[in-house]
Length: 328
Image (tube, rainbow, N blue to C red):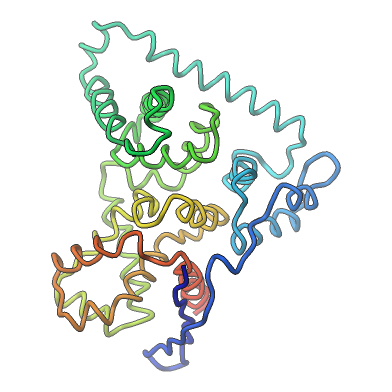
């Protein structure tokens, strides 16, 4: 599928952005494979700082072949450090696999009386069980009881592992996508843990969650002040982006397309590219939203209708905005 990507040229001393379409899609880039990674490593598997920087750039621009995603995600998400050798990586995998199953065994050993007295955890486990039953239930993968059990076990173990987050609806969707990349239950858990290092703020029950969405508004105000004024005047809350960010766009794109976006987000977690992707989607649809004079409910309904029809090349638009916004 082809979709327009827009280049934003910010004019000095002008509030207006000139937006010009360019013809570029995800099909025009070639994801990196394991050979590319090996070329960047030294003989023992470690990465110099320039090599690590090159890896991140390649992931950001090109994405990753699915067969290489577990390794590369572990590298860019900080599960492995660049200084680790092949042997040290293998050692950390063994240690963390044992850790995972030790944590899992803790809740497996709960007896009925323990759960009866620990009402909070019992409620969490009940919610996980309900959500697992309806998570991507139409997919062939989740018609296999072993996979639904794996999904449940990872979520229950994470709830026990991270008391600050425990469980929030949406984690089931994240784990479902991670399971497209690896069959290893331990790897699924630790990749989730790595993602939650920067996504956990959206699952905590505190005020931080509300503040984060102001970032989307700031980006829109920078690129298109007229659209930002429209949003403000019509009291359109940026909570319209909540599901996008919490699920990392899992329901807005097809599964493989979602993985392509995740590659770019994970390449530089500190860039918080999900904000720029949200802003890009809204900005691309700004003319329609303003022309139809949509209010909050109308915007929510409209955005639901376009899900799965958003071109993944919106990421390139998001990157242009990121570059302009960051270095303004």
